Image (tube, rainbow, N blue to C red):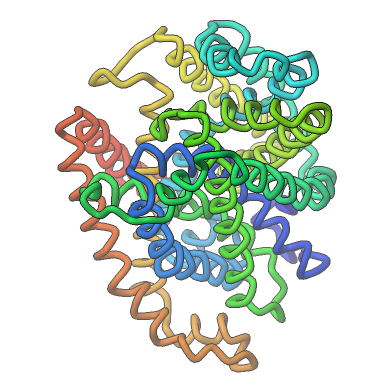
Length: 476
Ligand code: PFF
């Protein structure tokens, strides 16, 4: 991510269009697509969830990403600065984004650490006993120390990348490894589809059964769309602030949304047929990718070992290109708004995040505090993708629709009339009216239905945190 001091002008611009698209796609494509999407689809009944998710991606995700890019390029500022320079009263939206980044980084590196750990695990014989792969994963994540060491190693990689200011190296690695990961997913999908009984998996994933849909499923689909596309916390505003004035924002948005969605669907196609063939539960939870993929590769002999290694290297890099963008949102806030030096900003943000990750990781082994019977890992996950990102996205839309000027937005998106965007009116009305109302309705209904499981109370807590941060940030 070519983010430096966001308050500094003139800003660096992305060298090439492809460079920008790959960097933004690097933030979007990550654990959200390959780890989270399949198990969330599994837990929420499959086909109907996938259909609702796709509808949200196309209508809401696309519009919000275009809005974030337009705000970023228009103001040439990172998340908080872009609101602050327009109207100080709106700074709280940026602050909420920073808080979201902090919370996501309270559990994301735990899973990044698992991906990293699976590289040596695969290399040292994990695939030799396919029947033990499931148990080995359960034992690993509930072990109090092992996952912490891997999380620390993963965190150090993030710190090194972000302290250097620009993550050129990781982006180059991403440019090679992400297409490779995509190809490996294709191999996994083809192998999975060839197993007997696999077609039931495809049916589960693509044949909607609307009797399984309730307001919680709809909120899960909305949250997944925001999380997967890196929306609702100003990350894409920061990326947009580095976009050249001549680039086509609509086309760029289409490419990033398209790539992200393709990877998520492919991960689903790679996972579900195999799961059904292996007689596994679709609602197997967060271990899905770490159990199904090694089992599939175990069936493929030596070449399977090589593919499995490349898969977990690719997954780690995909996770890294996302988590550095999360860390950067918090770091650029500390640099721009608090005047900290980059290294100090990285170290202090990371220290807080690492402590959160320790609690998150331990909670998977049943250790540590619980709130309404929910462990820390699940609380962070619930707070961010079910509430923070959606509410953040809604506020970003309200800001664009009601605070910014329609003519300015049209000029920004059409490059002063040089690029045709016949759907501008539709996009504008979606952003101004439809998305804020839709997100509010989905979030409220999801929160109310969440009360049955105690999760509603945690989500209300999130709303309270958002409210408090709005009030506090007014005083900052
Ligand atoms: N989109 C990332 C993923 O799918 O793994 C996660 C993420 C990155 C969310 C950056 C939000 C963000 F700002």
